[in-house]
Length: 106
Figure 1: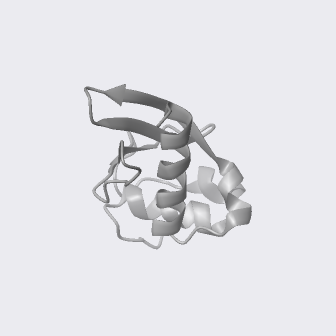
Figure 2: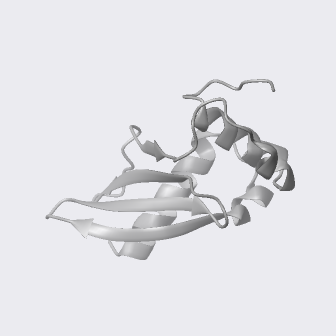
């Protein structure tokens, strides 16, 4: 498996997990895909212009670990007006992730 193949698997897994419509996938970018030790790839996915990122592990046999990590410098409950420019599915996904999986209404 190549880093590019691992990145495709991770992106598809994340989009499917969050039920992001295929037309909104273009908002997501693979930031990094690197091989770790002798067993998996670490893939970082983000959205251009935002500080948030998802970190996923893809094993050499092509399976994505369902326990991925979300990293953001934004505090839970912080202002989300910068998300107004994104499709609803993407904005909701980020807002929920920033709040630990809970969508808050501001």
